[in-house]
Length: 155
Image 1: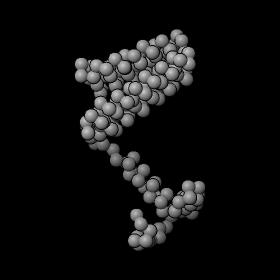
Image 2: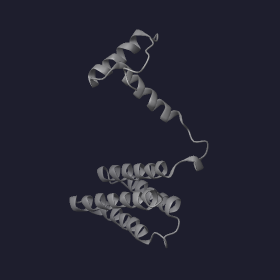
Image 3: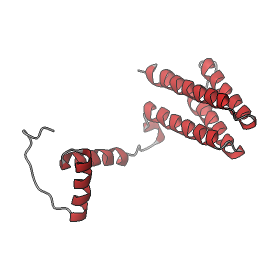
Image 4: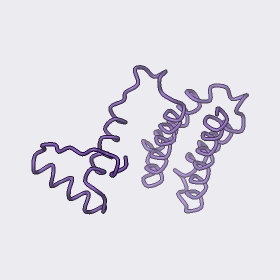
């Protein structure tokens, strides 16, 4: 949207809303209309709900599983309780059952998931810094594999 080629119009909004938008614009050092434009863009993204799970793009699906895995691993590393360990193991099972399905095709990936499972079980007994680093590195490797196998390979 170019300011020079656009025609402009005023809208009536409550003063409190104007003050809020104005404050954000000042803080970010951008025009007020850009704050509104960003807000509308975000609103549109969130209001688009797929009609069914089949409508979810592969990148959305992979992003969702990455998010769930990273969150559960992070929580477990901060508080290695039996409950939090169970959540990590659930995420590993979800990835294996819902995304991979066939371990003969993705043998290395399945082995890496099994490695993470073993590391998580060991961490409950020995929560050393080195074990934490190894779990983080293995989680990063799983993320890379998810991106490679399911996003880059499909394009």
